[in-house]
Image 1: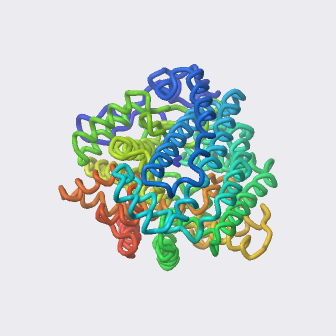
Image 2 (image 1 turned 60 degrees about the vertical axis):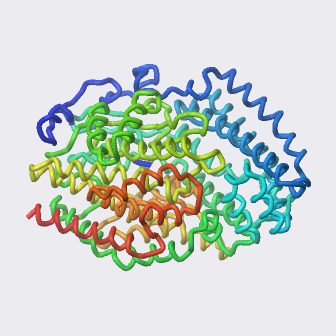
Length: 627
């Protein structure tokens, strides 16, 4: 997730109006946060495309309740014939398809306004029914494993309908040593609601309960702080505002300090429980094995970055020097080094730029993407109570959706390109793949989003001649690599450390986690950065720590995307065709294999080393331009 007035012209003739300030209610920094009803319908997603009415949601809910007991008809019978196995797997698909539709709709309704109890209840009901669905189908994998291998092979060969389930069945067999008995699998499935409790509590604190104080903006106006305004204020050339916003934002979390420490340590305990239950040696091994990612890929990534922090330290020193600061603070890490070139980019203007930037992906991609922007896919602006950040989500039976909290910055425009990459990946996969293969491992999912960002940056850099503008873009590109690659690996190292401590029988507290986070942050960013007393609260604010070993995949995806986009920009038609096929591939193979088919070998250190080299060269280029 990603995160002043006047006229600023970045690009060549034909795009002069792109960065002119537009006085749209939802885009301006008003003193109060807009309500959802204040936003024009064309800037709100259309969830009615999933369910036209909530009565239809209720009907699907009832349908699923009736369908779940029917799964018991297949218990103990999967070895009968290929036809019986096929019918069981098809019913499982139907169950998950409906479950996913119910869950996604309820979740996105809740994100429209997290304070509304009706949508909280809808979401909780969907989540509870999803747990029952997990219980209902929990016998399938262990029962397939109980069938002799030659018999399974014969079923797969003789029953044509089973062809689409080949990868699914192969993966079940691969994980045989970590699959429990049917009764044990059912118990683990029953624990689903309990397992989600830490994240649920964190979400309610972070999105619904927490209240941020007001700060004075550059003009001295009292402005209520929000997550999106906080990120925007961190880019302000007014250091007083950056400092005040940082302190106000962090202090809001002090109220929930012990609660947030408990939820994070609780989610790690949950991860360890499931890892041990499935006979894994560690939570890391359990997380990587889910998609058959070699542990060597993870370990080599961490080692490569730890051995090459010099360029990041150099960039931190460059920041300190250019900003002319005696002490560089964490709230100084986001302010552009060329503040006079700061961009104000209205949402509609951002779409025009993105369309031009992604032209190398072909006419069909552009046509489908632009249709999505005008067809109820996107919820654009921040409103009171709305879920924070940005994401792409959706279900198999409907088009993708995108949540934004757009606030007119260059970073926001890149967020749009990023999340639309996810949307198009989902859109093409759902068109091409059967339901069983319609998912995406994070290891591959982030490639599509970061490829879009890389193409956008290339377009912007090629279409500016002004040195200040180029510096601003280089600054942004460096910050993107810092945030998507280095920062995510800093998060990963912190996550790895706290997981290891729990596995070693040590207890965690908010204080101990803050110290680990502070030490890791300092190591990555070097001695030139001075951390304030509240800076280590960052470890308690990050959603992705509730998704076991998730963030490292941003770094691997960035490396893969850089490799792919470079080939596409060179006009390599085969590379483009391979990438477009990759967007259609879904979960039809293991992530490492899918990326190899797309032209990237992530078992090799080359993509990681190329990314480190790219960052170093960009820092050098910026240093030269600043001289």
